[in-house]
Image 1 (cartoon, rainbow, N blue to C red):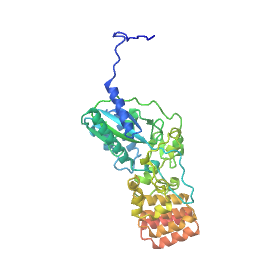
Image 2 (cartoon, helix red, strand yellow):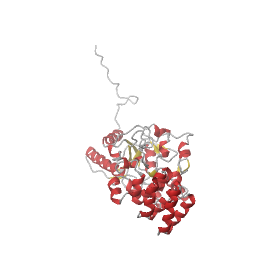
Image 3 (cartoon, rainbow, N blue to C red):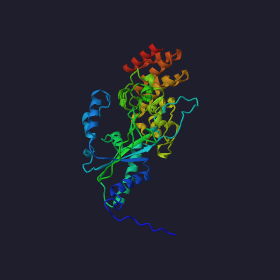
Image 4 (cartoon, rainbow, N blue to C red):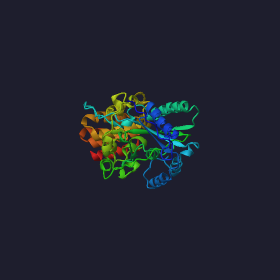
Length: 398
């Protein structure tokens, strides 16, 4: 027997259910974001971030961004109001692409190799995210059947990315100052889309690290000076990428085999350790040298070899001379007497004094009679005063 069940008559207690158009549109935006290769997305209001502006002022005054000359109070305050970028902005779509490839180990092939931070293994994420945001923008214009004013932002624009993502509930701040995204840890690259229409904001996540301090305890250089506070001049990512000059001698032994960036504070994080493996082809390394390059090769590579291997990835930011400098430090930390010949050749023949100076340090760190002979010869022939000073100090280490 079929039962005829009718809905109750409309009344103040039983109104007809109605869909919220704003909620529907917000959900649709997220569906389209996922279809365009954006792993996660969430929505924040376009209101200013006055508390973040005050925090950044204190951070700058404390000297924690020393060396980043572009990071000024003026820039920080500009960045905390997205309407400085787009006056019509009413909502912000915070997006991310996850890039954890699963457990990976440096090859044990008898070749001394360096480490490149995982985010820089594949194609330049700035271009990847912006291209996917452009595709999403086109989909939204078709969906709404009108032009949409927008700004597509990835990392380099004047916006406080992690603050936007935290407000949107995309993730929450870890004590290593990274954004931790449920299911992906901090292995997420962020981008934003400013939109000229109103969406339903998501709620921030009520999560924190509790009493865990493993990222602080395990930072190789002690750059995490307090929970949520990174002293940039000590951070291996800054030293290997942003710093253009000589790396402070006292920090070199703590840099291990990192030649571009550093993943230690992410690797040791329990939340990040539980991340789901992703297989985004654009973020995978094209060759072993895009993830674990031979340090000997880095030290002797030509500009053409550098470009052929790393063009289109984030690595060119450090330039050939910076990557070779970092390789010299890494060889000093993990190399053996078998690496003295390549270090000797670099000390006597590399075209960059910056690299020759760090090569001298590496020879001094490895030590032994062969290293001393190479340094003695270098001191006699070296035309650059700064490199000669490095050689003198290296000889004292020997």
